[in-house]
Image (cartoon, rainbow, N blue to C red):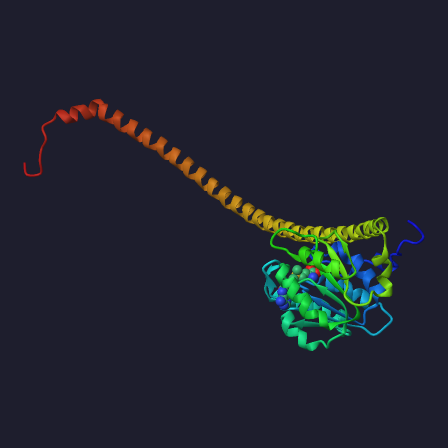
Length: 320
Ligand SMILES: C[S@@+](CC[C@H](N)C(=O)[O-])C[C@H]1O[C@@H](n2cnc3c(N)ncnc32)[C@H](O)[C@@H]1O
């Protein structure tokens, strides 16, 4: 690293407090930490929050600034055609996490981006993160409608500048805007564009002025920091899957034990029945032996001399 390279704020090395199973922003978390530290925004707005991975990173950093701050997350919390539609449980979970942790300076604004516009005076936003629907038309609309709200040193962040498939069009708008305003793009984690729509803030002037080699080095370092966060998120996800699997294993073992109890009860019943069956068989055998000896005795009797003589005598009926 050269002594003149733009420094990376220490805060960029912080560990994020919230990483959900939506990981598209995880690799950019150190950048969010650094941007807040370098820009020190008094007012931050995010358009598109979903489960709150990016918003949490910004709020975590804002909370540490030694100046008054305001933050707003705008979302319908219903989803869109790229993020998918989702149910109320998403908003409920975000609120449960957000309100106690960041409620002292931040608000969740549940509305469309357009409807939220009227709550923000012109020139009032220092840092805006646009991460709603990613078609070119939608992002262009979000940028143009929110541009008047930006302060004199306002910075707009665009997520997904490096996605070209599935109808994503942020990259096209980014090409156009980065030719018009000073801007830098981090290509990893789907791409993050940093656009200075007013005067370039002092904190990130070295980023805007960096030559190609310096810039390449800086983004590599942020990429390495981002990879650490991405891996932390993956570890968390694997740990919670492991926890769920352990719970299933315990439940299956309990079930097996119950089945084992039933099984030994069933074995006891079968054993009693087998015993009764053996007794019946024994009695049957004895009866068969007795029946055979009775038959033999009868045959012997029929063959006896006295009986044969008797059979030869004239039969005298009751009326004779
Ligand atoms: C890509 S997600 C946001 C991801 C989030 N920044 C993260 O860290 O994972 C997009 C969100 O924008 C919301 N959204 C899209 N268009 C919107 C609009 N016009 N008004 C309000 N919310 C919108 C969707 O409900 C969805 O939750």
